[in-house]
Image (cartoon, rainbow, N blue to C red; front, side, top):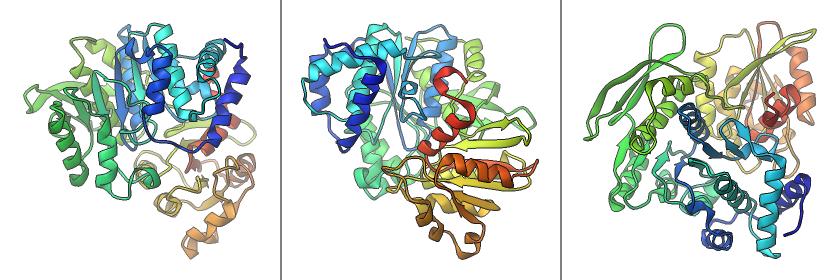
Length: 441
């Protein structure tokens, strides 16, 4: 087996990005078989959906960790360091472990080509198996049916929601996209979902029935509701076990990630935990402790930057219209400020107009920028997407650092700088402002 340093392993993985996205499971199954099928050595939870996957996964990790279980977490994309994708509990994969697992995969490949995501997924499976996790939480990368993570048979499948995104790969209608998301449903494996739209829900329901999979729906079988008053508390209504809404199970629960929509993601996590409770029981104290410790950087993450001119920053990786709609509601309901200064950047293959116009009308100043050269939309090309009356308040910055400087120059003591539109943008901004996630900054 060839030796690799961490930097060599990361560089090898980065070079795989030049190969186009390839949906399909044949090469993934062959690769894992040649590695000894590590995905069979631990139980897992599988999470798909358009938005909210990471928040639900982070909640599951925190609660199960509070209960004493050794839990692996595989998510994507990362903000600035590839190591963010791989965690056991609160610890990100060590550089030596990353390099060792990567070297094993490179040796098995023998020059055969695979995609970036296939390589990363195989690395996660190897690491979790080597470290003998009690269970792993796997987040779907793209779609579901043909995603590289869909080689597992989980204890429960979680589908957060369905909205338009990645249409060039998944289809142009809600029904087509829902069918791809429903592809993670396995025969007899329970499904927990927050899907509410009639068209998408019909597809999910049919897929669950076809697979003889018990289906638990948010709003019917379980729910989460905000509690009045200060403190950001909520109530979870649990599963009844026979398809009827359950009694109030837990009140006064903490919600650490901002945004009322996060109640729905947290409720999904608690419902999934109820489904697997016989095998991985958690107690009331574990739930409360875990919920109080959920962290998900770059998603409605607010902090202050000290200095000669202290400023408030809000980071949110809203990269599609549905995510931006959620950001808009949070800006209107959960944050107080005099003026909003928006730093916006997006990938060129996204619905930039639909995403931008959800939040741009709230901003008094809009600064367009780009995080990286390969797929980022040019700032000057995004300005014309604004209504004419908003273009007068728009500026362009060649990179994220310059955009932040422009925003700080224009920011008053009670203003809010919101950085959104792409996780690449948010990742670079967070790296500049707070340091690396993996260093615990």
